Length: 361
Image 1 (cartoon, rainbow, N blue to C red):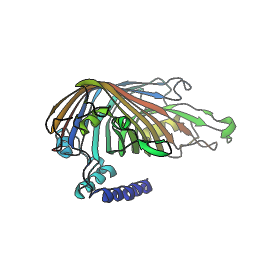
Image 2: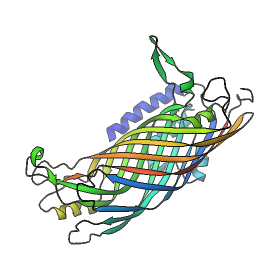
Image 3: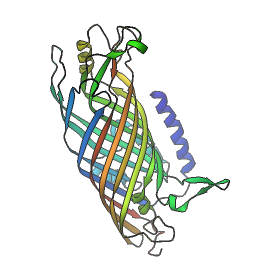
Image 4: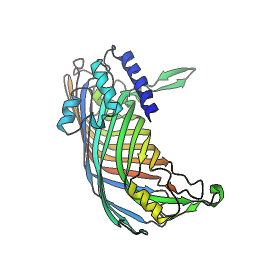
Protein backbone atom coordinates (compact mmCIF):
# COMPACT_ATOMS: atom_id res chain seq x y z
CA UNK A 1 0.00 0.00 0.00
CA UNK A 2 2.93 2.35 0.65
CA UNK A 3 4.02 1.81 -2.96
CA UNK A 4 0.55 2.81 -4.18
CA UNK A 5 0.66 5.98 -2.09
CA UNK A 6 4.09 6.87 -3.44
CA UNK A 7 2.89 6.32 -7.01
CA UNK A 8 -0.07 8.66 -6.49
CA UNK A 9 2.18 11.20 -4.81
CA UNK A 10 4.50 11.14 -7.83
CA UNK A 11 1.86 11.25 -10.55
CA UNK A 12 -0.49 13.83 -9.09
CA UNK A 13 1.98 16.64 -8.24
CA UNK A 14 3.33 16.25 -11.79
CA UNK A 15 -0.15 17.00 -13.10
CA UNK A 16 -0.42 19.90 -10.67
CA UNK A 17 2.78 21.48 -11.95
CA UNK A 18 1.79 21.17 -15.60
CA UNK A 19 -1.67 22.66 -14.99
CA UNK A 20 -0.96 25.29 -12.34
CA UNK A 21 -0.11 28.09 -14.75
CA UNK A 22 -3.04 27.55 -17.13
CA UNK A 23 -6.26 29.57 -17.12
CA UNK A 24 -9.09 28.06 -15.11
CA UNK A 25 -11.55 26.16 -17.29
CA UNK A 26 -14.40 26.04 -14.77
CA UNK A 27 -16.34 28.76 -12.94
CA UNK A 28 -16.34 29.37 -9.21
CA UNK A 29 -19.01 26.99 -7.92
CA UNK A 30 -20.22 24.98 -4.97
CA UNK A 31 -22.69 22.08 -4.98
CA UNK A 32 -24.45 20.51 -2.00
CA UNK A 33 -26.29 17.18 -2.04
CA UNK A 34 -28.36 15.92 0.87
CA UNK A 35 -30.13 12.59 1.40
CA UNK A 36 -32.21 12.86 4.61
CA UNK A 37 -32.99 9.14 4.86
CA UNK A 38 -30.63 6.74 3.14
CA UNK A 39 -31.32 3.00 3.38
CA UNK A 40 -28.52 0.41 3.42
CA UNK A 41 -28.52 -3.23 2.32
CA UNK A 42 -25.81 -5.87 1.99
CA UNK A 43 -25.75 -9.21 0.17
CA UNK A 44 -23.07 -11.87 0.59
CA UNK A 45 -22.16 -14.20 -2.27
CA UNK A 46 -22.13 -17.36 -0.11
CA UNK A 47 -25.20 -16.39 1.95
CA UNK A 48 -27.47 -19.18 0.70
CA UNK A 49 -24.70 -21.78 0.44
CA UNK A 50 -23.90 -21.56 4.17
CA UNK A 51 -27.51 -21.49 5.40
CA UNK A 52 -28.22 -17.74 5.68
CA UNK A 53 -26.95 -17.41 9.26
CA UNK A 54 -26.76 -13.59 9.36
CA UNK A 55 -29.49 -10.96 9.10
CA UNK A 56 -28.85 -7.24 9.47
CA UNK A 57 -31.21 -4.44 10.44
CA UNK A 58 -29.64 -1.24 9.13
CA UNK A 59 -30.69 2.12 10.52
CA UNK A 60 -31.50 4.78 7.96
CA UNK A 61 -28.91 7.55 7.89
CA UNK A 62 -28.41 10.88 6.18
CA UNK A 63 -25.68 11.62 3.65
CA UNK A 64 -24.18 15.02 2.95
CA UNK A 65 -22.04 15.76 -0.09
CA UNK A 66 -20.21 19.01 -0.84
CA UNK A 67 -18.19 19.79 -3.95
CA UNK A 68 -16.60 22.83 -5.51
CA UNK A 69 -13.46 24.73 -6.40
CA UNK A 70 -14.38 27.94 -4.56
CA UNK A 71 -15.05 28.22 -0.79
CA UNK A 72 -15.22 24.42 -0.54
CA UNK A 73 -13.27 24.46 2.72
CA UNK A 74 -15.53 27.09 4.27
CA UNK A 75 -18.79 25.45 3.18
CA UNK A 76 -17.55 21.96 4.00
CA UNK A 77 -16.52 22.88 7.52
CA UNK A 78 -19.89 24.54 8.16
CA UNK A 79 -21.53 21.22 7.26
CA UNK A 80 -19.07 19.19 9.32
CA UNK A 81 -17.15 17.85 6.32
CA UNK A 82 -13.39 18.22 6.58
CA UNK A 83 -11.13 17.49 3.61
CA UNK A 84 -8.30 16.65 6.02
CA UNK A 85 -10.25 13.75 7.55
CA UNK A 86 -7.96 10.75 8.22
CA UNK A 87 -5.01 12.66 6.73
CA UNK A 88 -5.55 10.87 3.41
CA UNK A 89 -3.48 11.42 0.29
CA UNK A 90 -6.29 13.01 -1.77
CA UNK A 91 -6.83 15.82 0.73
CA UNK A 92 -3.06 16.40 0.76
CA UNK A 93 -3.02 16.69 -3.04
CA UNK A 94 -5.88 19.18 -2.87
CA UNK A 95 -4.04 21.26 -0.26
CA UNK A 96 -0.85 21.27 -2.33
CA UNK A 97 -2.87 22.25 -5.39
CA UNK A 98 -4.18 25.29 -3.51
CA UNK A 99 -0.64 26.39 -2.69
CA UNK A 100 0.36 26.06 -6.34
CA UNK A 101 -2.61 28.00 -7.68
CA UNK A 102 -3.89 24.74 -9.17
CA UNK A 103 -6.94 25.20 -11.41
CA UNK A 104 -9.40 23.10 -13.38
CA UNK A 105 -9.99 20.42 -10.74
CA UNK A 106 -12.58 20.37 -7.99
CA UNK A 107 -13.07 18.52 -4.73
CA UNK A 108 -16.02 16.39 -3.64
CA UNK A 109 -16.49 15.26 -0.02
CA UNK A 110 -19.17 12.83 1.22
CA UNK A 111 -20.01 11.79 4.76
CA UNK A 112 -22.55 9.41 6.29
CA UNK A 113 -22.88 6.67 8.90
CA UNK A 114 -23.46 2.92 8.61
CA UNK A 115 -25.16 1.58 11.74
CA UNK A 116 -27.71 -0.93 12.96
CA UNK A 117 -28.00 -4.34 14.62
CA UNK A 118 -26.91 -7.75 13.34
CA UNK A 119 -28.65 -10.99 14.30
CA UNK A 120 -26.71 -14.26 14.21
CA UNK A 121 -28.75 -17.42 13.68
CA UNK A 122 -25.78 -19.74 13.31
CA UNK A 123 -23.79 -21.69 15.88
CA UNK A 124 -21.92 -19.83 18.62
CA UNK A 125 -18.76 -21.21 20.26
CA UNK A 126 -18.34 -21.19 24.05
CA UNK A 127 -17.24 -17.88 25.50
CA UNK A 128 -18.16 -14.24 24.98
CA UNK A 129 -19.82 -14.48 21.59
CA UNK A 130 -23.24 -13.01 20.94
CA UNK A 131 -26.20 -13.62 18.63
CA UNK A 132 -27.11 -9.92 18.57
CA UNK A 133 -24.61 -7.07 18.18
CA UNK A 134 -24.99 -3.36 17.47
CA UNK A 135 -22.58 -1.69 15.04
CA UNK A 136 -21.75 1.84 13.95
CA UNK A 137 -19.13 3.18 11.56
CA UNK A 138 -18.49 6.41 9.66
CA UNK A 139 -18.62 6.46 5.87
CA UNK A 140 -16.28 8.96 4.25
CA UNK A 141 -15.39 9.57 0.61
CA UNK A 142 -13.26 12.25 -1.02
CA UNK A 143 -12.64 12.71 -4.76
CA UNK A 144 -10.46 15.04 -6.79
CA UNK A 145 -12.19 15.40 -10.17
CA UNK A 146 -11.73 16.98 -13.60
CA UNK A 147 -13.81 17.27 -16.78
CA UNK A 148 -12.56 15.76 -20.02
CA UNK A 149 -13.60 15.85 -23.67
CA UNK A 150 -14.79 12.53 -24.99
CA UNK A 151 -13.65 11.70 -28.53
CA UNK A 152 -14.57 9.06 -31.09
CA UNK A 153 -12.55 7.75 -34.02
CA UNK A 154 -14.47 8.90 -37.12
CA UNK A 155 -13.29 9.03 -40.75
CA UNK A 156 -9.69 8.29 -39.85
CA UNK A 157 -9.29 10.78 -37.01
CA UNK A 158 -10.32 11.42 -33.42
CA UNK A 159 -13.21 13.87 -33.17
CA UNK A 160 -15.13 15.33 -30.26
CA UNK A 161 -18.92 15.18 -30.44
CA UNK A 162 -20.29 18.49 -29.12
CA UNK A 163 -23.62 17.04 -27.99
CA UNK A 164 -21.95 14.17 -26.17
CA UNK A 165 -19.48 16.49 -24.46
CA UNK A 166 -22.31 18.66 -23.19
CA UNK A 167 -23.14 15.75 -20.87
CA UNK A 168 -20.27 16.68 -18.56
CA UNK A 169 -17.92 13.69 -18.63
CA UNK A 170 -15.34 13.64 -15.84
CA UNK A 171 -12.63 11.49 -14.26
CA UNK A 172 -10.87 11.55 -10.92
CA UNK A 173 -8.97 9.89 -8.13
CA UNK A 174 -10.33 9.37 -4.64
CA UNK A 175 -10.21 7.75 -1.23
CA UNK A 176 -12.96 5.90 0.70
CA UNK A 177 -13.09 4.62 4.26
CA UNK A 178 -15.97 2.66 5.77
CA UNK A 179 -16.83 -0.28 7.99
CA UNK A 180 -19.77 -2.70 7.99
CA UNK A 181 -20.74 -6.23 9.17
CA UNK A 182 -19.77 -9.28 7.13
CA UNK A 183 -20.99 -12.85 7.07
CA UNK A 184 -17.93 -15.09 6.86
CA UNK A 185 -17.96 -18.40 5.02
CA UNK A 186 -15.06 -20.53 6.28
CA UNK A 187 -13.20 -22.92 3.97
CA UNK A 188 -11.29 -26.07 4.86
CA UNK A 189 -9.17 -28.61 3.01
CA UNK A 190 -7.40 -31.84 3.83
CA UNK A 191 -4.40 -30.74 1.80
CA UNK A 192 -5.69 -30.74 -1.77
CA UNK A 193 -7.81 -27.57 -2.15
CA UNK A 194 -8.42 -28.07 -5.87
CA UNK A 195 -10.39 -31.25 -5.07
CA UNK A 196 -11.53 -31.30 -1.44
CA UNK A 197 -12.17 -27.64 -0.55
CA UNK A 198 -15.42 -27.36 1.43
CA UNK A 199 -17.28 -25.04 3.76
CA UNK A 200 -16.58 -25.12 7.48
CA UNK A 201 -18.75 -23.53 10.16
CA UNK A 202 -19.50 -19.85 9.40
CA UNK A 203 -18.76 -16.82 11.56
CA UNK A 204 -19.39 -13.08 11.46
CA UNK A 205 -17.70 -9.75 12.02
CA UNK A 206 -19.57 -6.65 13.14
CA UNK A 207 -17.05 -4.24 11.62
CA UNK A 208 -14.96 -5.13 8.57
CA UNK A 209 -12.99 -1.95 7.77
CA UNK A 210 -11.97 -0.87 4.27
CA UNK A 211 -9.62 1.90 3.14
CA UNK A 212 -9.75 2.21 -0.63
CA UNK A 213 -7.86 4.31 -3.20
CA UNK A 214 -10.06 4.83 -6.25
CA UNK A 215 -10.13 5.75 -9.92
CA UNK A 216 -13.51 7.01 -11.13
CA UNK A 217 -15.33 8.41 -14.14
CA UNK A 218 -18.82 9.26 -15.33
CA UNK A 219 -21.03 12.11 -16.49
CA UNK A 220 -23.03 14.76 -14.62
CA UNK A 221 -25.71 16.82 -16.39
CA UNK A 222 -26.26 19.00 -13.30
CA UNK A 223 -22.64 19.99 -12.88
CA UNK A 224 -22.27 20.58 -16.62
CA UNK A 225 -25.25 22.96 -16.62
CA UNK A 226 -23.55 24.75 -13.75
CA UNK A 227 -20.25 25.00 -15.68
CA UNK A 228 -21.79 26.60 -18.75
CA UNK A 229 -23.91 29.01 -16.72
CA UNK A 230 -27.12 27.52 -18.15
CA UNK A 231 -26.31 29.22 -21.48
CA UNK A 232 -26.91 26.04 -23.46
CA UNK A 233 -28.05 22.47 -22.88
CA UNK A 234 -27.30 19.17 -24.58
CA UNK A 235 -28.05 20.56 -28.05
CA UNK A 236 -25.45 23.16 -29.14
CA UNK A 237 -26.89 26.61 -29.84
CA UNK A 238 -30.12 25.98 -27.97
CA UNK A 239 -30.87 27.20 -24.44
CA UNK A 240 -31.72 24.53 -21.86
CA UNK A 241 -35.26 24.09 -20.62
CA UNK A 242 -35.92 25.67 -17.24
CA UNK A 243 -37.42 22.44 -15.92
CA UNK A 244 -35.96 19.17 -17.18
CA UNK A 245 -34.84 15.67 -16.28
CA UNK A 246 -31.24 15.21 -15.13
CA UNK A 247 -28.97 12.18 -14.74
CA UNK A 248 -25.66 11.65 -12.95
CA UNK A 249 -23.53 8.49 -13.12
CA UNK A 250 -20.22 7.34 -11.71
CA UNK A 251 -18.18 4.18 -12.21
CA UNK A 252 -15.40 3.58 -9.72
CA UNK A 253 -12.79 0.93 -9.12
CA UNK A 254 -10.74 0.89 -5.94
CA UNK A 255 -8.04 -1.07 -4.16
CA UNK A 256 -6.75 -0.99 -0.62
CA UNK A 257 -6.40 -2.74 2.73
CA UNK A 258 -9.28 -4.37 4.57
CA UNK A 259 -9.19 -5.75 8.10
CA UNK A 260 -11.36 -8.03 10.23
CA UNK A 261 -11.58 -7.65 14.00
CA UNK A 262 -9.94 -10.13 16.37
CA UNK A 263 -13.47 -11.10 17.52
CA UNK A 264 -14.34 -12.63 14.14
CA UNK A 265 -11.01 -14.42 13.79
CA UNK A 266 -11.27 -16.04 17.24
CA UNK A 267 -14.91 -16.98 16.57
CA UNK A 268 -14.07 -18.65 13.24
CA UNK A 269 -11.14 -20.57 14.77
CA UNK A 270 -13.21 -21.64 17.81
CA UNK A 271 -15.93 -23.03 15.54
CA UNK A 272 -13.35 -24.82 13.37
CA UNK A 273 -10.82 -26.25 15.87
CA UNK A 274 -7.26 -27.20 14.89
CA UNK A 275 -7.31 -24.69 12.02
CA UNK A 276 -5.87 -21.18 11.94
CA UNK A 277 -6.57 -18.04 9.91
CA UNK A 278 -3.30 -16.84 8.38
CA UNK A 279 -4.04 -13.12 8.84
CA UNK A 280 -6.93 -10.75 9.67
CA UNK A 281 -5.69 -8.36 6.97
CA UNK A 282 -6.86 -8.50 3.37
CA UNK A 283 -6.26 -6.80 0.05
CA UNK A 284 -9.67 -5.47 -0.93
CA UNK A 285 -10.90 -4.66 -4.44
CA UNK A 286 -14.09 -2.64 -5.00
CA UNK A 287 -16.25 -2.13 -8.08
CA UNK A 288 -18.67 0.73 -7.58
CA UNK A 289 -21.61 2.20 -9.51
CA UNK A 290 -23.70 5.29 -8.75
CA UNK A 291 -26.83 6.65 -10.47
CA UNK A 292 -28.98 9.67 -9.69
CA UNK A 293 -32.05 10.57 -11.77
CA UNK A 294 -34.62 13.29 -11.16
CA UNK A 295 -35.85 16.78 -12.04
CA UNK A 296 -33.94 20.05 -11.97
CA UNK A 297 -34.81 23.74 -12.29
CA UNK A 298 -32.44 26.67 -12.73
CA UNK A 299 -32.48 30.43 -12.19
CA UNK A 300 -29.98 32.53 -14.14
CA UNK A 301 -29.14 36.17 -13.58
CA UNK A 302 -26.22 37.82 -15.34
CA UNK A 303 -23.00 36.25 -14.12
CA UNK A 304 -24.57 33.73 -11.75
CA UNK A 305 -26.77 30.66 -11.87
CA UNK A 306 -28.56 28.59 -9.22
CA UNK A 307 -29.72 25.04 -9.93
CA UNK A 308 -32.20 23.14 -7.75
CA UNK A 309 -32.76 19.40 -8.16
CA UNK A 310 -34.56 16.51 -6.51
CA UNK A 311 -34.17 12.87 -7.47
CA UNK A 312 -33.53 9.32 -6.42
CA UNK A 313 -29.99 8.05 -5.83
CA UNK A 314 -28.79 4.45 -5.83
CA UNK A 315 -25.24 3.32 -5.13
CA UNK A 316 -23.75 -0.17 -5.10
CA UNK A 317 -20.27 -1.37 -4.17
CA UNK A 318 -19.15 -4.94 -4.81
CA UNK A 319 -16.23 -5.84 -2.54
CA UNK A 320 -13.72 -8.64 -3.13
CA UNK A 321 -11.34 -9.39 -0.22
CA UNK A 322 -8.21 -11.40 -1.07
CA UNK A 323 -6.36 -13.27 1.68
CA UNK A 324 -6.72 -16.03 4.32
CA UNK A 325 -6.74 -18.93 1.85
CA UNK A 326 -7.02 -22.61 2.77
CA UNK A 327 -3.99 -24.34 1.25
CA UNK A 328 -3.10 -26.92 3.91
CA UNK A 329 -4.95 -29.02 6.46
CA UNK A 330 -4.16 -26.53 9.24
CA UNK A 331 -5.44 -23.50 7.30
CA UNK A 332 -8.82 -21.88 7.72
CA UNK A 333 -9.89 -19.95 4.65
CA UNK A 334 -12.35 -17.04 4.77
CA UNK A 335 -14.76 -15.80 2.11
CA UNK A 336 -17.04 -12.80 2.65
CA UNK A 337 -17.37 -11.36 -0.84
CA UNK A 338 -20.53 -9.32 -1.27
CA UNK A 339 -22.28 -6.14 -2.38
CA UNK A 340 -23.14 -3.10 -0.26
CA UNK A 341 -26.08 -1.01 -1.50
CA UNK A 342 -27.59 2.31 -0.42
CA UNK A 343 -30.42 4.37 -1.87
CA UNK A 344 -32.68 7.30 -1.06
CA UNK A 345 -34.36 10.53 -2.19
CA UNK A 346 -31.85 13.36 -2.64
CA UNK A 347 -32.01 17.14 -2.79
CA UNK A 348 -29.32 19.14 -4.58
CA UNK A 349 -28.35 22.76 -5.11
CA UNK A 350 -25.56 24.25 -7.24
CA UNK A 351 -24.46 27.88 -7.19
CA UNK A 352 -21.97 29.16 -9.78
CA UNK A 353 -20.48 32.51 -10.75
CA UNK A 354 -18.35 33.64 -13.70
CA UNK A 355 -17.86 37.25 -14.86
CA UNK A 356 -17.60 36.03 -18.46
CA UNK A 357 -21.25 35.01 -18.45
CA UNK A 358 -24.10 37.22 -19.55
CA UNK A 359 -27.78 36.81 -20.28
CA UNK A 360 -27.24 36.16 -24.00
CA UNK A 361 -27.21 32.65 -25.38
